[in-house]
Image 1: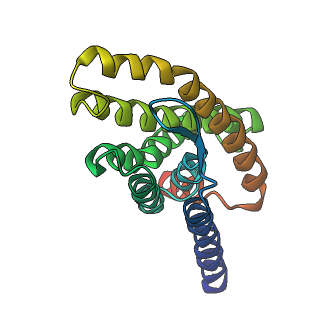
Image 2: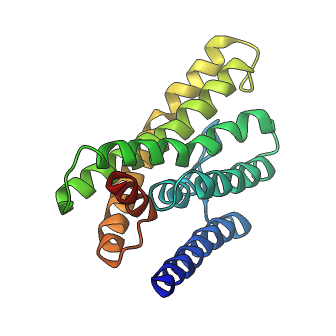
Length: 199
């Protein structure tokens, strides 16, 4: 029993480390940000490991990866203040976690692949939208795109295609990865939820 528990802990630490490493690589290399000729400066795939952190491990890992994302975003785009760039990133994985767990509670074991896809897709989309809505919303509140509300709203509307694309990418990649990892027992949030249900 102890051996199995130790094995699970090692597996969790390893996969968690991989997610953090991917997040750091995306930041240090700049691969996580895709420059675009738009006022929002660019698109991102940085949110993918943050969403996965929430789905796979829960709140603690989600917040760590989200903070890394937020810090790199602040340093990469210094024209935007940290209080606009960081908060939305912190809640990406948090949203993904609660959406995924909420969906899982609706399904009975054994969990069908279609249910996994639906839960991970919704978590990916809403996690991605959390980032976009909070970051752009704070940008409007603090008028980072100009003193006039109309100028800020114009930036928001111009960003809609990017927001949609990021959400679609999150849905596709997150659902595919979750389906691949589930048979291996790598989704810690499902294991924790199952244990609580048994208690």
